Amino acid sequence: MPKTIELRPVDHITTDAIGPAGQRVFYIQAWKEERIVAVIVEKVQVQSLAVAIEQFLAELNTKHVDLPNASAEFDEAQMHIHPPVDAIFRAAEIGLGYDAEQDLVALELREGVESPEIASDELHVARLWCTRSQLRSMANWGIEIASRGRPTCPQCGEPMDPAGHFCVKKNGHKH
Image (cartoon, rainbow, N blue to C red; front, side, top):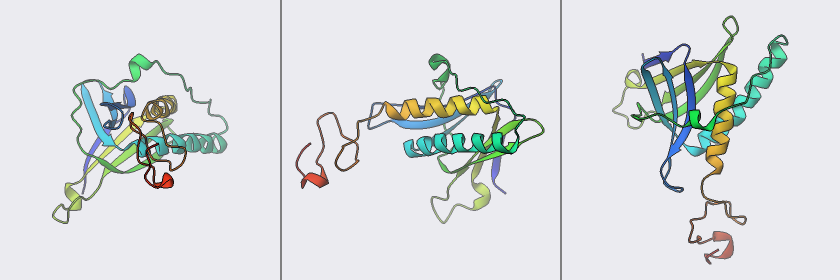
């Protein structure tokens, strides 16, 4: 059985990145009282999760018409991750669940198998229960953080370094 870490409910949840553009490491971090859980994620996971959260919340509002809308407001100063940032694992899978009785959303992050020597019962799972508003704020902040990275080349869609990049669509000529 995987090693499960569960915070129910979290006091706060966020996503953020540390490092210069092009070398950033993205994290999802949550805490409850003194316990802090941080997991490494990829930039594309942050972006995809933000879209999935909006779709998930829209679906919840359709199924549960009596639910008030989740707030999207956030204070940037509160959305940055808090040190120490000691990631437990790198997320391979991310999922969402809902407890209608308590109106809490579960953000589940699962570690992936990196080598055949690692048994599935040695892998980590972090289940972070939060309010719909906490989740929407995290999603909106995640989109903001992801957009602060390197600009994307209009021809090939790859990130461009400050000095430019060799664009495959331009036969390797610098753009």
